[in-house]
Image 1 (cartoon, one colour):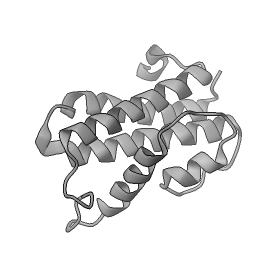
Image 2 (spheres, rainbow, N blue to C red):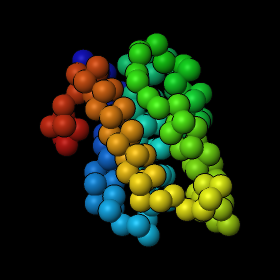
Image 3 (tube, rainbow, N blue to C red):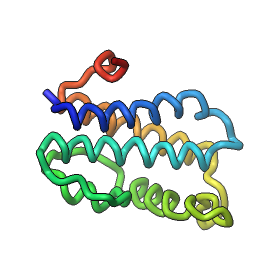
Image 4 (spheres, helix red, strand yellow):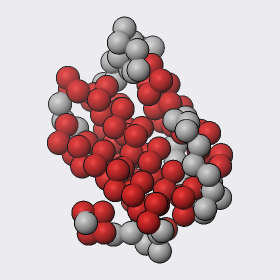
Length: 136
């Protein structure tokens, strides 16, 4: 069962997951889908670190966080790399989280969302946290 700090990270990530459900079909918001997908994954990975009683670093790079956890979480390396790049670039207005070919497509956004949901669900399962636990 997840400790209190791990659960708080998951609650924060759950807000991102819930937000994604509302915007996933809006082509105008695909860069926002990418941002919230990255955030949901980051918070789930930080929940694992809290659960493992590791110091949670003040970093946002998913690849860095994945390298620090001992649990075997499945993920698509290419999507993780893209989300890392988009997250950093989205912090600067001129780039707005663009891929080399421009703003993420709706198909890209859906892949990001699916990956975020998959990782988030997997972490919740491993830490034995239910959706009801996250709503409290």
